[in-house]
Image 1 (cartoon, rainbow, N blue to C red):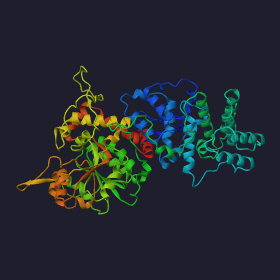
Image 2: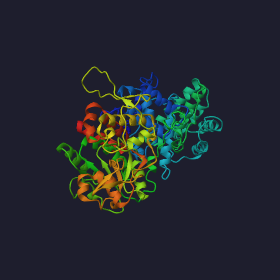
Image 3: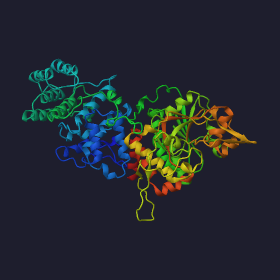
Image 4: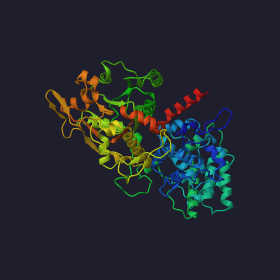
Length: 637
């Protein structure tokens, strides 16, 4: 996270590290100058060893899914010091995050003087981290971004004659190998070039092609140094690094080829020098484990493809507001799901059910800042009924969210919308963790891991440490498949167990173990009458923490019943009247923090809310994270 702050100059001309909460992947590239030739402090830590295995291992280039999992793993580390130091690894990781960012996010960072400190570091291949392999891939991606309006390949003029011929030779051979015809072309070019009139980037490229074809020793070192001097002489632009990423001259590709050559010389396994990101996106996660139904290798869809088929479908979210510390987390996911950020939500309404003055003031500030997308609508009706009074447009799919939804997978909202559009269910639920019905389903399919609180701390004070996993031990209690059960509805220990299990799966990338496919809440019916009273079956009333529906699904609900108990009315009684099913979508993962009876125990005895807050910040769309950080800095001043 925090890529916005890479190499942002301060008032005194220095380039400060990013000021973001928690542990950030981003780091100004200029700090590498002091560490490339010295020991990499902190890189021996287990976390950074895993990062190195993913970003510079045999399965190169790293898939986008693996890069994202590294971000999430760091956000979920129990001890912040576990990822301290290792600025080299942090820099390479930030480059890969930029490679896999949305096009608009990538352009935003490059426009904010990304890499202006790059000229202060030595440009030497770093095979242990594949630094220039990452830069070469980023260069290729930026070139793809600008394919409709390509940047000029030259320094200050169009290439002619020998320059154009040499560039054409390089472009016709991909990836670069630094020997054979390329080396011969580079030598011919250098012999004929008038360096005073030739683009320094062309000279640097030719020198590095020759370096890649030269045996280790003094000659190679001199070619590298001279090429670096020529490339760094190209300083006529205010932000030259941005231009380096757009130029047609394959500078970084040559150094990436040298990193490969050095790996070959060490007889290490290597991967191709450069692969387009689109190729690695479809690769399996680089975690090297065999298929196991309880520990699956999970794939995630590309964020930019989630809108497919929903371009013309209007989607509005209705958030039931009451607590700012919960909405502060949910806000991250709402931003990520907005249409303007590549999601499907067009509008977000906040309906206040009950809130303290401090919470309400926060909401007003949030709506003011993000208007008109965020809004405080006019409502009708009493109590809970007013939530649904804004859902009147027959063509809109509405998403109702409790304010304590603390995790949303990228595909959750789109997949819920798609399911509602199939018209086989009235109300569509997300696949919610800590859910009165679905938690039992999760246990049945083997998704729930067993966790236990640490005991024997010798103190009466609450122990807020993460729980300990023990799959070989019987669970702390039975999960009952019915509404308002002891586990999970009433017991905070059960909620903590559900969250610890889910966060552990997010950490190791096996969260798709929770995916049950499709669940019919009313497969065995809705209930029956006892005299004049309708009695739902024990498992047919279900929690409506996160649901998708259309106006037709709620418009004829009984207002008085909706006001007093919207869950009973919408989850079972009204579907029975309409003869409709309600269902849940397994791919639509979400986490619900607490039921009312769980809340005090969770807040007093765990730090789970803070852990979800940290995870949410790591997933906030970068342009909005930038704005949040800039606001925080101004507030501190």
